[in-house]
Image (cartoon, rainbow, N blue to C red):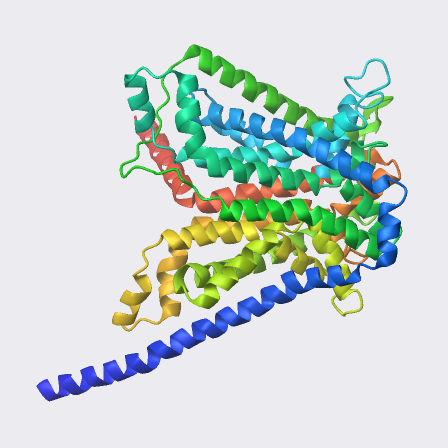
Length: 559
């Protein structure tokens, strides 16, 4: 018996010696494969874009003074919009996280609604409300078009992103430090300066540059309400799409890339010096009528403004001839569907579903390699992965059309799926990287000892452990693919056009009612998908709630 046990142990040890190096080399090969894929679809297109620039493009861009004006307009409007947007987002996040106001869940839903429609729709909503002959423009003329319109639209478009980031940060802050400060009699402004700001320093810088990059690279809002004020993205769009001058567009794209790269480098090298304590305690807001009144005011005003924009789409979409004839009609829906609206809606849904699935799988595989394998190759792979965070959609789309114009991919849904996966890859990757990094690092080692292959460890332990993050990644890819108009605008043709680009088309022909219909359709699809994602994540709670309600009804009947 002992000999048999010894021989079996020797066999197991030999098998493990053979198996473990194989799995290690397989992991390295897989990392090399992922690195090659990311290089092909992230780095090489940018190099192709740089190679497209020639001497003529410098003359085209820098002569006439149009570029200098557009650059100044972009920096000015972006800086003002970013400061207001970040300040508003922090106030809203504070109201949700640090006060005892009611209807927090409802406010949280309303405040993120602007994320579910394309940016150009925000500009159109402002025109309906405050433009010439708008609902709140009683004189008939408006000062909306220009700087004011761009700033208002950019704030509406960007503050939900900063709001969600602030809420996530405040959720994990420790309250014990503030309790000690209250005991010592330190004033609230002093606590904010000495405790809150140091704790949020890195996150605040990251949020500021995220919002700054989001606004400066957007052309939807300036295109709708910019008027005579042109920004760099609009100039790039006119050169590349309107005049088919890819060289001039490439040069402008490089300038758009600069602030994004600077933001990326600052975020990469900015070390977080805030130290968390070993025992953390969640905030339990105390009753304070003045605080709650301020929280209600900021939440109600912002939510009302968001709802006004959404309602304005409905008024315009269902009115016969806004604003002269407000009689109810479905004619604009018929016109939209007659112009291939249903086909483009189908394209958008299919594109978004494939983008979400492929993006989720690729981002999980990449995050697993970089967070769990921890080889030299994984560090390189991590750097390549987060590079896509600093590439604006317009620049990425332009680089793809230069690289793939003559290939079989151009004109198909495949290239739109590829560009969307790359465009939105970095944020889900970072979410999954953080989730996988926090998991017990000994899971794979225990699997080896027990003779369980790595694939089984991933499917049975790791994926169930980060299920919510995977669903969030899928949701992020889907929603952003439905609303994007930046990268896909260069690559879409009549056959593969997504629904969001119909807004540009209708806006150009002054068919604002049909553009409002498109915004409503996109919003409806995204709300439906968000509800499905919420149901999947909270399936157990919903089942428990339904069962508990059923038991109560049975008890009432028996009584």
